[in-house]
Length: 559
Ligand code: ATP
Ligand code: MG
Image (cartoon, rainbow, N blue to C red; front, side):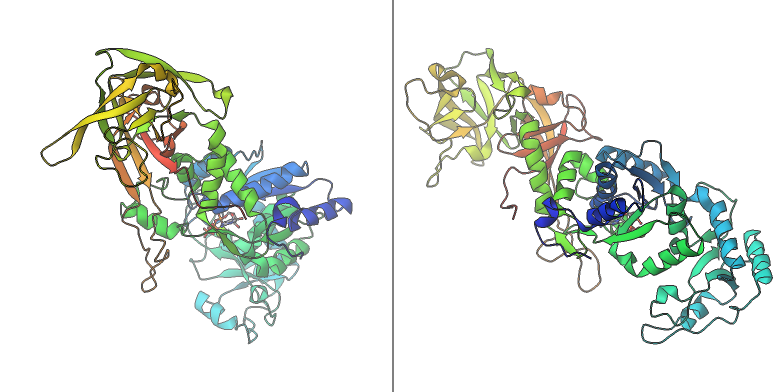
């Protein structure tokens, strides 16, 4: 395989593209077909997004087809709930399977026939060894395995027994069908692998029709072949299974056999992707569901406010390679910032409000100031922002006794209220505990729009919200769910090292009236505070709830 290095992945052709182009040039396939084959046993996460966009992207690039297929051959863990969530996630990501939505369970009949074909070719046999015995007979990496005493059953006997397996005449675990390959193979996957097992279980799609189920390594190549998949792209852990994949398609004599290609999984540092762990976080009530914005399931990223474009960009930047590596979460944050920078309107929201009274401003009067929605993107237009005698500003934008270099509001200092006026602090009120309750200012009517009337300069510009028209909002601020210093997993017991501060709920935020109209998934930049998204479960018009997607700045740089 071609070696990939760093940045080249992004612009030059990746190794999978090279394989496809060669196959097309040699006329091996007329048209390519890829697929995404999730098992409906959980929610998709950012790693799956890589696989989805890779498969879909290749089909697009080479004018081929992209199939969506549920690999639902194991009824123990699969649920309809997951089928629905997976479909929604893939659609949201923008991968379009058109009319090609398939279920592996619809091929059970063909898989059964395929197994019969192998038996007839003396390439499969029914084995009575227990699971434990099969394991013992399998041998090790350094020692060959031992042949099963049932290996030389006649074709007739095998056909009869396999049919009885299908007809429910045997108990779970009492018999399996095994491929007859080579117990001395250096590749353990080739040592007469089990290809069918008895399992009296109700399947979410086929109900009680079947009591035998095919194993993944046997089922997957058949699914690919039936659908005419040309390039079956999977992750690196299946590399050692490829000889078995090839054996299955060869022995079943498919005219256009699909080809398996492996690439490295996408790993993100300091995030939790394991289903087992997420399930526990949900059960323990640490997160409020599989789409809690602190998780990296696709549903969680969507709820937090990530855009499909930001995830597409991220996956593109990660590139495709054969070498396992992990990517920093900061790169994902970089991608959403870049995407929202121009797209999101920039609004004013005060997360920790303190009141300002402009004593020389007419009482009871509200004026409307025209403010551009995004200074860098005039296409987003402008809006009317109310201004009045009483405002809110961020508590941290005022200091009674300023520290060195402090440029914001303090007694006798003049600052600019963003897009509004110059104001000078003239005094303050405190409660009995010494907390500032009201800041008194005067304004300069000639500085309307925030422009200096006479060339005099102010060093600080702060944002504000008009008190009379402000809407009260809840903002949810996130940190990593795990403690980055300690690492994701506890070295002693394997549990998660949780960060107790992963969620901060700020209830009494004051936001401009426009934000009160926010609908689910609406995204904004709150000036100086970050990018936010209206929560799809809890935000209501008039009582908005915002998730912070990401803060505005980071030290992350693209290498
Ligand atoms: P399980 O542990 O249940 O097998 P899984 O994450 O492998 O979980 P699947 O439904 O089998 O889930 O995965 C569907 C597809 O997504 C597979 O082709 C798999 O290779 C790919 N995939 C899974 N995790 C990643 C990842 N981190 N990066 C890239 N692709 C992935
Ligand atoms: Mg899997």
